[in-house]
Length: 255
Image 1: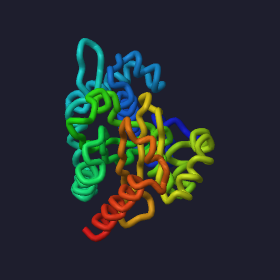
Image 2 (image 1 turned 60 degrees about the vertical axis):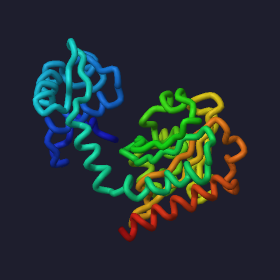
Image 3 (image 1 turned 90 degrees about the vertical axis):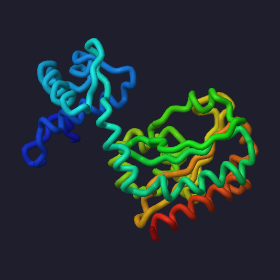
Image 4 (image 1 turned 30 degrees about the vertical axis):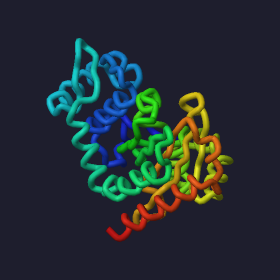
């Protein structure tokens, strides 16, 4: 039976107050509009007085900000996020190939090229490249993070994980739900395509890239409104995407 992350057992060696602080931070990360201390107490199961003390400490370190009793992530979080992304050199390795896809392969089509990395059970977009032909609502409407099991880049990344890591990342219920699709993505070498998932008419193609380990460090994603003829693994765009990610993997492994 899985224990509450806010209440570590004595054998875990973890510090309860730090565990609880991260539970609160993760709750705020999934609540862009912010939340009150009472909301956070109800969602996390942590006593309201304890939540208040945690928030006060987190605000001291700028990990949390407040506006009229509503709490949200603070600017210090961005420092840690960018430091993590920089340490892996993902953006440096992938950006040239993402730009090349946009300029030489898509050649002005109304599409968006993104670089995503995994963070626990979510895919986080760390870079986007578009052209003046890309509709502004496509750029704005697509979020910055998605559940790994609910987007093309996430399924592409998950397809490289061993079963035990997939289970630890998603949990049994979520993993069982996507097992058949994950099998198909693995058979396609990590290629995944979706259509109309987050916006009507919007299609996405994703392929993973690797460092020195088998599990992907991230994925390059091409999303657009005119890609219905490119959703097959044998399409021209899919082949270019695969080669780009293979080049990124080589750069990460030898960099």
